[in-house]
Length: 116
Length: 113
Image (cartoon, rainbow over all chains, first blue to last red; front, side):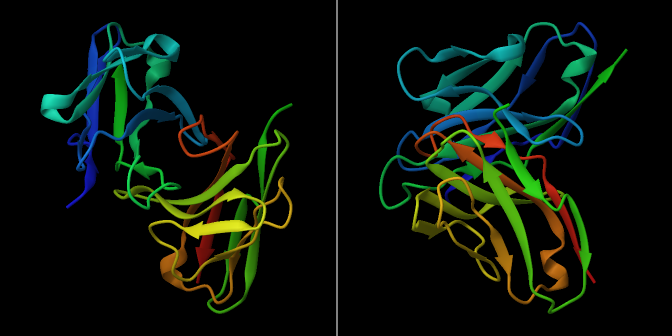
């Protein structure tokens, strides 16, 4: 079935440690790919997006993501986590074929906790 | 200030009592959409609108209605709310379409008793 999967429901990292959040998709062709962040009690904010070209994309707040076609993945990374990064992170896809011209499909999210 | 506003922010209601959640954006955006967020399920799109008078179903449209009579407003209507519509609702807008940066409202927490 077509889906966006974030395998990790909850991740805890120490402040200053590196971070990688996983996202996999299963669609017939490469969709447009996004990462959004939701801080507690807030709406969502776009971190970065990938449409084509360079497979390593830079976003805001020091985040980056790498698209790997062979693995159908779009993992989010940050080299050194700050306490303010504690939030929930959502991977999202927009299909670029067929009749799904208006949909934006979100994964179930990964909650990030940061230890001092 | 560029923003998406939603009202009310919190609402407790009873089964069957019609309600409307308003959404307004001041950025002259064409694309607007509604999502519901439930624990363990992430965000699921309810309806979206590519521009005025054009709306289409998302993944979970059952039990909801929308209208887009003006560019800035995109209200979500629950004609006969049921307890399974208890959720956190977000409105979002973007300049042209779904691949543009989505700007989210602050959310509306709805409880249906």
